[in-house]
Length: 290
Ligand code: SF4
Image (cartoon, rainbow, N blue to C red; front, side):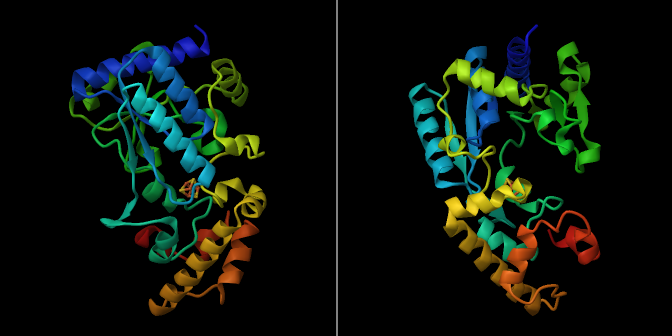
């Protein structure tokens, strides 16, 4: 079975579980990036009922926001239900720019609290489709085609979906959030070949030379952030303002002040010296307040 057929078989199996146990169609989480573009096209080709959500991160490039809007418009013409979710923190509307002062630390590669609050909303009690791939990063290398998330990453249960793992039934019966990763075993070239063949309308950020589409300034982009801030300078100003607000709040809370100015935070953050040692820097503070 080739990769496309395997992915379609996963989606068809997941759609059956979703209809049978959740009495709802599959829910595709669409970010506007290439992997979610593949999943969207595969849902169409699988001929399964599905709905689509997009989490508004508030830090996406304008091109991404417009691309999502155009895609949703097209999907609605096709009769697919779409919804944009606005992020919340402690029950109130939030954004990247208020989240940083509220949490009190900059988002880093190791502490991506922003993803949890801005990007991972929706999907409770649903069978959810995501464009997660093992080849994307070390942290995703152990991903499976179907997963039951745990409270911690180490607590997740991976199902052998391709071989009809029956352990999937019990969580579906209690309408737990199940994550389906139809393209978990696709490499980058498989993604691009598929999208080229499908003539998919792509997020313009790719043709502008960016290899990944996510929040502008995402710490996962490392040095590519310099090019991002050259392309979208307003975002650099927003981060600087958020870091200034963060320092004010830390001072008021009488917390450690490893930097004196927002500029110091920004330069430290851009140099990406925050990969290791971040936890040491703040001692045990990080886990609790986030
Ligand atoms: S900045 Fe990166 S880690 Fe944070 S929400 Fe955006 S994509 Fe996730």
